Length: 216
Length: 216
Image 1 (cartoon, rainbow over the protein chains, first blue to last red):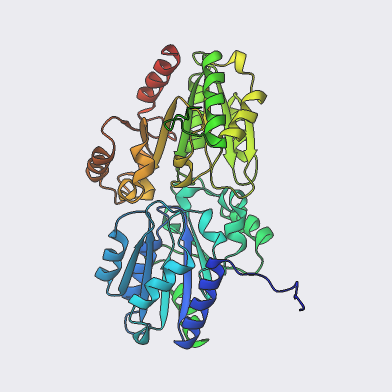
Image 2: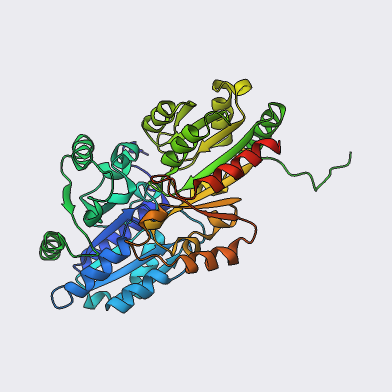
């Protein structure tokens, strides 16, 4: 008997992530994993995106929170299908949870699934959910030292949304420092300055989202 | 031989927390564990507190971050001794790390030690560090849904600082909702509305801190 030492044993999470990837490919669905601190504006970004793209992109959302289904309610009010996962203390979503939630969404009627992860700038970045892209949100009030202090999360992003950009003149925030720190960690990420509250910069984000759909 | 089934086996973290508690008591040191989301203003609160109380309270700080010693540098600039712990990915400080850091601080010349935990509203609340009190910071830009969405963290606080209160007129934030949600989770916590940037409300916080010292 020959044992191939190069065969990696997949963890339960990695196995479920692979299943999710296959499921999403079969259904020609783009899937974006949204990661940020609590209160950076993930749900507000999603609600505005759903409203503004309602005739162009059919969006479904998987919501992760320690507790409450407030975010899923906000998404449904904005006009999209949403499934809430309450992690009951866990600091991140897992691929098996996403697998369960994907079965609950009307996937045949969707172009794009957002996974809004638990508000946490550390733990979610270590768990592959089978997503096709990863979006990290940093909001201006959090301060300009966050990429350097949470490097793992920013290193693995495909897109970094700098949200609440409308507040920059009220707060101390050195945008050049943030861009320089991100450049060291991640040279490929697209960086977009937006305000989900005012709409500033959202068109660039929408253009990128439309490309995700058509590239599937 | 009789085995007492009521004897709990302590985890490594709990054992170290007990050691820390003994060490702090021996040195008549108050010790406060500061927990919040990234960017809620923990370091700014500490820096202002150190400056304003420099003739009244001898403060030392243990800083926890995934990466960088930026916060320890800010604390030293404000005039206090600081020890930085870089967790290299871990989402919270542990009691053995705090044990190590306490040995590095000039404890015989201090009245109060702050532990600024890793910016994370989930993980740190599950780990006893041997502290004498727990302070949770919620900042206005994070939004008014946070106590309901992160109940475990708010339930275990002795003091809840609502920071960046100077921004409340610029942002949607229902203070009554926050107070009502906290009241359900935690009836004993003292709640203080402050702005470490402007100084608003800080005196109440200082009065409470002075009491912590004298009650040791």
